[in-house]
Amino acid sequence: MARLAERSKTVHDTVHGSLNIEGVFLELLDSAEFQRLHGIHQLGLANLVFPGANHTRLEHSLGVWHIGTSMARAAGVDAGAGEIAAACLLHDLGHPPFSHTFEYILHDRLGIDHEETTRRIITGGYDILREGERLPGRRSVPSILEDAGLDPERVARYIRAGEAPRPDGALERFGSGSRAGGDDRTRLGQILHGPLDADQLDYLLRDSRYTGVAYGVIDLPRLLRTMVLHGGRLVIRKQGLAAVESTLVARSLMFSSVYFHKTVRICEMMMARAVERMEGLEDTDLPRLVDSELLALLSSSGRFQRDIVTRLKYRRLFKKAFTVPVAGLEEGTAGRLARLADPSQRRTVEDEIARKAGVEEGYVIVDLPSREVLFSEPRMRQTGVLILDEERKRLEPLSRHSPLARALQNRPVPDWAVMVSTDARSRSKVAEAARRVLA
Image (tube, rainbow, N blue to C red; front, side, top):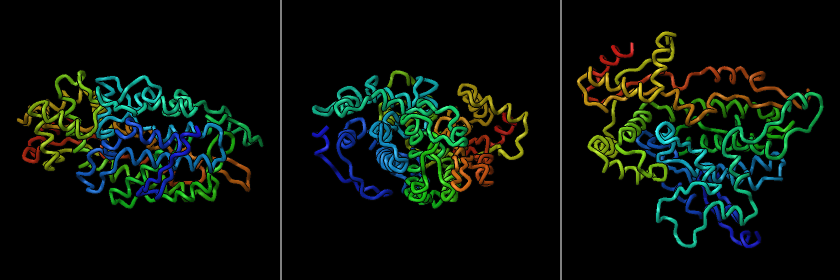
C-alpha cells in the first residue's frame, strides 16, 4: 500500500475542478478496463442534437468517485470508505458502446446487464478487453484491488442496487431515540444507490454542462453540508430542503429535455435497430466494443446497417411521423400498446406499418420509451429522500415537506407513450399506416 501511495496525479475536471488522485485509485485510473471508457460517449448519440455532448463515461466515473468520497466524508463514515470509493470509480466498467442506447438488446438477446458485467469485471469473472488487447505490464482491476488490500467481491457488491443489506426499522429506531442502525456497508451503499446518490448528482451536473441545457443546476455544496447519517441512513437536514427540491426538478427536466428529447430518441433508435437487425449478433464481441468499433462493425455488416451509419454520420435522421400522447391515453389503448414492450411484437408491428405504407422493412421505428426508463434509470421517479427536522427530532419523508416532490412523482417523462418515426420522404404514408395499426 505504501508503494501505491507514493504516486499521485492531478486531473483537471470540467465540472469539479482539480482532482488529486493517488494510491489504488490512480492504479485503477491507469488500468485498461478504465481507460476503455474514453471511447464510450456518456450520452450516446445526443451530440447529434446537443453538439457539446461529447463527454465520456470516463469523465463521469471520475466525477462519481469525487462526489462519492465527499459524501462519505460528510456522513462521517470511514470504515469501508476505500471499497465504496473504488465502486464509485469502477461502477460503469461494463457499459457497452453508446452507453444505454441498445442495452435492452443486450439484455434480451445476449442476457447481458451492464451492472452484472461490471461486477464480473471487478471480481475477475469477465474480461472486457478483446483478445490481444491486454498490453504487457498493465494489471487487471481485481489484481490492483487485491494488492491494495481491497476485496474485489466486497467492492462488486456495491455495484447493484439493493445488494447491501438495509437496516430493518431504522426510521422507527430513530423516532424512538436510537441512533444505532445499519453497518458501514449499509450506510455506504446509499452513496452509489439512492434517491440522491453520487451517480445521479454527477450525471445531472455534467450532462447539463456539456449539453448547454440550464436545467441540471444543483447546489452540491449545500447538499453535502446538510447531509448527515441517522438511523443507518443518509438523510438531509431540513435546511437542505430547497437544494433537494431543485435537484429533483433538475432530474425531471433533464429527462424530458435531454435524455428523452424526441430527436435524441430517434438517433438512438436508428442505431438500436441497426444492431437489432444484424446477422450473427450473438457471435460478435459487441459488449466489449467502444463506439468507433461498433460503427466500423455496422458499416461492414449489411446494406441496412451501412445506410443507418451513413445517415447518422451526416445527420440525415428519421423524422417523427406519429405519436400517441400520454395525456388522455385510454385504458384499452394503453393495454394494446403495452404489448409493444416485447421486442418481437414491436418489430412485427414496425414491419406491418412499413408494409401498409409501402416502405422497406427497417425504415419504420416504433419507440415505446417506458421500458427504456426501467433499463437506463430505474430511479427516475424516486423521491424517497428523508428529511431530518432537528428541532422536532423527527425524520420524515420528503413528500411530507414538499408538494413539489409529490407532483414530480406523477409527472410523465416523456409525455408521449409511443412515437413512430421514418425517413422524411415517407412521413405522411407512415403516419396514416401507424394510425390504422395502432389505433
